[in-house]
Amino acid sequence: MKNKLNSKLETKWNNASIRSKLLLAFLLPMVLILIMNVYVYIGVNTMITRIDEIYEMNVSLNELSEELTAVQTSMKEYLENKSSVALQDFYKADQNYRNGIDKLGRNNTHDERYIMEQNIISQSENYLKMAGETIQAKRGRNVEKYKSCFEESEILYSDLQSCIYSLNNAHFKINTDNYFKLLTTLRYMEIASLVILVFIGVFNIVILYLLTKSMTKPLIELSSAANEVATGNFEVELEPLEGEDEISVVSNAFTKMVDSIQVYIHEIRESMHRESELKEHELVMESRMKEVELRNLQAQINPHFLFNTLNAGAQLAMMEGADKTTEFIQNMADFFRYNIKKINMDATVAEEVELVDKYIYIINVRFTGEINYSKEVDETVTHIRVPSMILQPIVENAINYGVRNIDWEKHIDLRITKDEELVYLSIKDNGSGMSKEAIDKVLTGHGGEIADSQTKDSNGVGLANVIERLQIFTGRQDVMEIRSEGEGKGTEFIIKIPYMEGVHV
Image 1 (tube, rainbow, N blue to C red):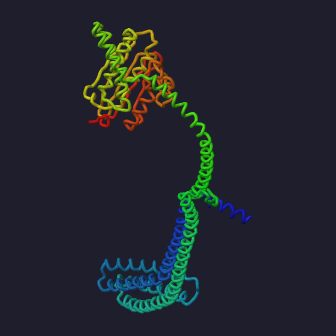
Image 2 (image 1 turned 180 degrees about the horizontal axis):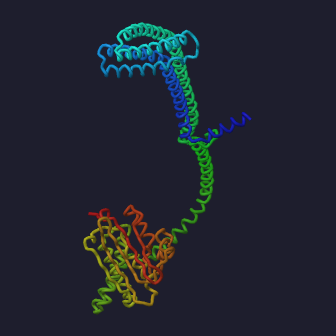
Image 3 (image 1 turned 180 degrees about the vertical axis):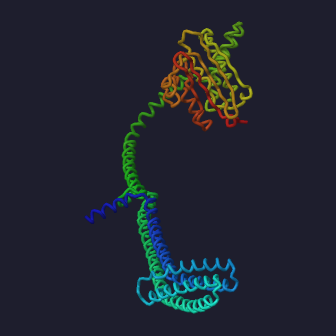
């Protein structure tokens, strides 16, 4: 049963976090010190109370002696002056003395002090009686009686003072012995407190040593193993640690990581072996691929040849007086020149807007002007630089998937505004609209056909590509917002460019 209990305690200790172990290591000595301080405090207060009790009787006897003197003094003053004030003082002192006498006779030890207290009580009654008769005789103007009573009361007064003094000395002697005994006990308590403090200090040092050792030992082993791994030796072995504290978790995770790296290295070696086997086959195929590439290169059109051909066509149309054909061919040439020239470059907002104008013109020539296009541009932001080819792909997407197949009048609206922090480039159509699911797919790069726009009429730059380039250019994630109220209610794409970050001199 005892071994089972020890096992449970050890398991709980191993599973405890480092914070809990440290708190326990510091709180336990503090609790012990607090208990010891409470014990000392109670003991000292008990001693003080007992010391007060020891000398309480001496204080009472001194007060009794003073009250007796007050009775005798007030009686003399009345006999001499016969004033009402002196008479009041006498009766007041008489009552106070009687109250003091009532405190005597409570000693149940029946020793010499008890006998002395009983004697004082008896003599006090006689004295007070004689003092009262003296006062009454004085008031009755019985001179002989008050003189004889006064003389007798003086004798009793002297005897009482002697008895009180003797009783006070007897109590003081015994109380002094008790006082020294209490002082001895207090010294023993002081020594015991010091011993307990030393024990708690040693206990605390032992606990901290064991705790730091249990933490630093696996950390030292882990550090040594990590240095070995850093030098390229992955054959290190660490003993698995029991428990769920932070050090055990890190050490066991490190062991698993090293094992995973060894498996990964083994897989890489096997992969490299397979690649070396395939390399010979690839070298054989390379010569054939070169031939195919050459044929593909021969089949490609030189962009400069394309621009020159379009310009020649524009000049021929101009000579023949075909102004619309000239304008169309010139716009086509400018459009393709911009596409080729601005690859992997940035552009101004003005250049992007001009490209959209040309693109809308070309599309309207193709589709007999069915696209109604309007624009509203804040001229103060046209100089701001943005990634090239960000507006035209969105306009192209709005035409192909927004307004191309609708039965009502088609509108594309371009609007560029700004506030204190951002420039907003908005492209809005009145087409078929988008669902929330489709918007989420586009913004997360999983928009499928809409996000890529790789149709036969596309320039090959998809919405996912636009969003990615904007995020890289601005260093922000929230570069585009898509709004749509539902099916048949159109879609608005809003590009957000930081105003200051977008300015390039």
